[in-house]
Image (cartoon, rainbow, N blue to C red; front, side, top):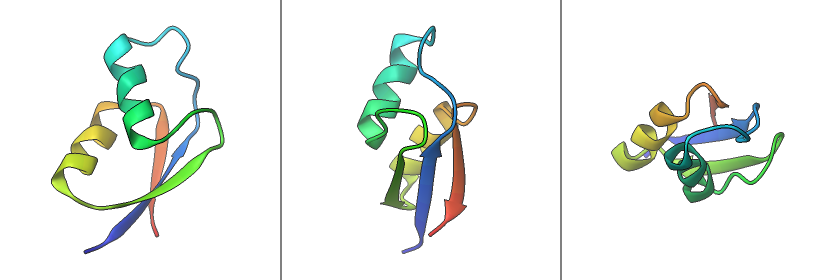
Length: 59
């Protein structure tokens, strides 16, 4: 399965609680942090929820 690299590019301050929880579940804890995940439907859905706060690329 393909891998995706997710990088947080905007702050979670003044965001909805669900968006903060989604970033936390993805393993992102601050601007500039990167994580690599399998491109499963669950992960892609989480990325879609916070796409305005992160950048995504192929790993």
